[in-house]
Length: 368
Image (cartoon, rainbow, N blue to C red):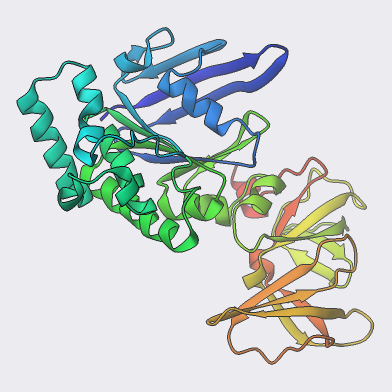
């Protein structure tokens, strides 16, 4: 195991600045997931750690060693790619042993490591087969085994489940989680799928336009997003957003007015905001309750999705063009065409300022 430390890491391709002043620490034995939309720089950042791309600026350390100029083979990392990249003419055993043979490892050591890795990944009965005789999940396990057999200090995963169907993704997600618990290895994992990030990570790094937007545990990012971007990216279905206007504040929080919701007394601090300032109110689907419509402040139900154990109810917004979503346990009494009132759970409402930064709770601001 080894730690990874990035200090002011930059990557420039020609005139395009891809990675911008990234500071990050990955502790020994941590499972860290880089997540973000396409083009945010997550795979590039992983390739910088692996040594597959040169660093334009900053310092990268693995353990206590600065590795900016070290080639990949000397960094002690193993990498699992999106494509399995298995040699079709080789057996599973030969594929897993290939890197060790290139490193001129003794035959006895190769056999010992391949067999030990095969036991961990439950590949012992497949060692004589060739890739064409394997399922997608088995091929991905072989690709993982090839990296593990080299006993790297760090395992890097670049969207390893993207080519698998939905059921196999769930299966392999569990395999990777069990593998981490069993080995305790330092793992860095890249995905665009926030569900993978939430279910696998000890720590999630949300990237946006080459910068770190927020770092934290899955619980922290879900419950306390630092920005509107993180709030909208983490969580499925996504958080509901609607415009809000700040009214006169109070000692215990602030008052806002939102279309269709009326006036709400929220626990956030609005001390640094002017009355009338435009804010964004955010509330997750499970924290938005439906009630019988009263007066003109009602929302029309435009779709109801039944998912077995839960129901998503989609509502026409009062402002903006994105449908609002209510999530509840099945069965649901709500029907398409009904008009309902929305009642947010105030303790779970988020407020974001004009720069999309989250407003802190009033009591936290006072304590500081």
